[in-house]
Length: 168
Image (tube, rainbow, N blue to C red; front, side):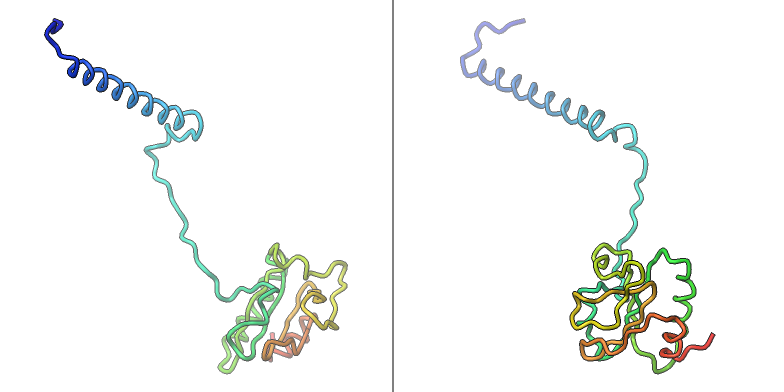
């Protein structure tokens, strides 16, 4: 039943409401289309997503910043997280850190992309370097740092054990 006595204002309001409803339907349609075909998460909307909380490991360093730690004297143990002897290296470091008067030991992961340019190729590790750019780390390297300068550079695990006073 059409109202023949509708004013122009009423007709404009009806057009506006129809236009608004049409626009809302288009937006809802685009939303569901995007969820279904672009992000493909429409079917999985009921599943619970699990997140892993991030954490900062204060014992890790990168080569570019290893000389400016807050301690006056400390060690940096550089080795690959993929090395087959990683548990052996960690055991030695854990024994040393467990001692009463031990210095802080930082770990430098040679697999980290930021450390790759400091890793020696073909065992060309150099104990003679004057700047950080010349540093080449071996398979296992223990650096003793005092007042922001490298005072000892050890690539032999047995010498590192002696330095840390750790007996197997």
